[in-house]
Length: 467
Image 1: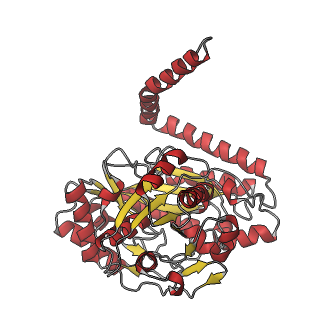
Image 2: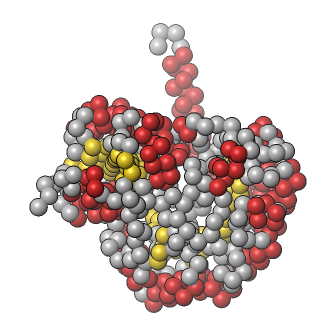
Image 3: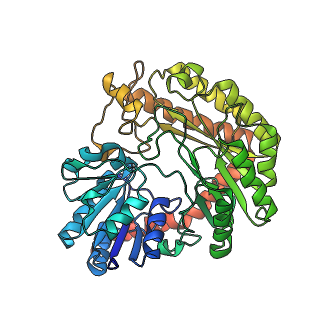
């Protein structure tokens, strides 16, 4: 029998730290739950949600004395993931440092020169691989890992997700005020769930280093069991299905919705989820069933208001289909969120203007408008590198709000100005068209005012002579 190990799992700060985590890391919760079920001593740290500094993390490492430190990492976390690995090794050179997630999965062996304190890279689906690492006497023969200058053969994708356990959210100290949920939130506490993995579409900007283009579906009854568990065990009132496309498989999706209704989980619980806007995937009947099951918000990835741009980014979608999806979603009484990207190859002032006009026509409840980010291994990265349009090669400087590309017509500064203009105009339209938005803005300012005044007074006191 394998000796129980102490294992610290860390979700690092982002390169430019943000003030909140929306949800616990699904990967760390899954791995942590599986490890604990095997008898290992597990601690999960979410540095952002716990307002944790590197100094505090060092104290935890020294007191917990982990045999293994596992770090999840996306491209916006490289800087602090490196610092976490350094702290782990400086505390104890014998600690095994393992990293995984979309960024390591894309880079594999290329990661090591920039992460000298990392021993093992897990690429692809990582839960079984990490479990094998924790229980093996010699990890080197394990599939799906890189170490030194060696890359082992990949682990086959899971085709049956029955092994996924009910999540132990006690490992992350889950409570209503610790994780904000994805905006907008309909009820607190809110929690996410993945009912499927992967997406068959081939958008050029999407990092597919973990799940590729094959979609694996969990059994609907297992999905519903987890929903019920979250509601009964942790008091969750809103569930966010974080699948790439919940409406990809019509029969499977309908079974989940019917089970929610049959088990009464549409009472006291509400839901939101991403849908694809393609005409063959979304229709009024499916949306009405979703509404009956307690869904209140549908997220659509719109990206751009120009058909040529959508085709160039291989979105597999037309502007006409997008308009239709929003129209019927609103018709059945569901709210919408729309996401847009600025700065993809081919972007011009005209395409940005067309995107703004499409946003006005769609009238979503909430919107996000983000700079194009060429994640490692994506087709987008290859295209901007080939054209000389990648302006930053240091991943530590990547941030979800930062422009690091240009286009044929638009410089970085042009894109920044257009982005600011787009956001200002969105806010202005909301203020004019929805007086309630003014009340929400004023309410947020009033809630923040005491904190702001406190900071001003503290700074004034600190600046006074003698302090």
